[in-house]
Image (cartoon, rainbow, N blue to C red; front, side, top):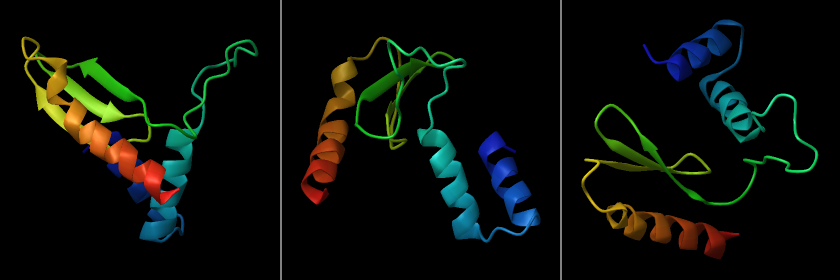
Length: 97
């Protein structure tokens, strides 16, 4: 079981409903993770839609700063593979704000 699913199940076990538990996890995802925080370069995940590409086990995994997923590809593929989906996502979020 993935850690996120375990956390959701634990929150539901102590009385949160599915929506409330998901909301707590979403808020935690947006909180800065740097400990202790650097006052000169404040980390924030609360806003923005930066494209994040991580190297997994023999694959590249793309996501947005807000948590949206854009898929996986092989390390020899172009990073441009992820750009159209990320652009659509980011532009939709800007228009909806």
